[in-house]
Image 1: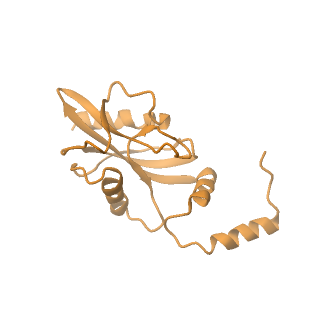
Image 2: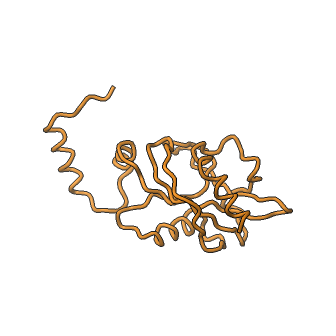
Length: 167
């Protein structure tokens, strides 16, 4: 059970937070902020058409991931106080998709959902994978998603797939 902090504890926590620069937060602080607030997210659903079927490129989270160890996921990022939308989209494409050739991100929708680490307000985009993605992740049939997928991503992957198919 969480106990309410004293006024002195709140003041001490605020004084520590004042020392942080806007942008990337140390994980223990990010984790607690994400638990307490709604976090803005950018999600990119990488898709392709292969042998007449829509496939999604899913990446595997690290085994020591504190929230979703070893789970498959569509790439995304938390919007930082220092970000623009373009810098966040670029970070996903460069860091998570490791420069795999994709189309420009196409906006799908905004949602509000609980991700497992807290409430999130993601902006959902799809991209079409044009280049070789070996070594980055694995393609799966978009109509038969794997069981070890981060479950909260089922809140938006089907919408992105429909938008891609309707293009």
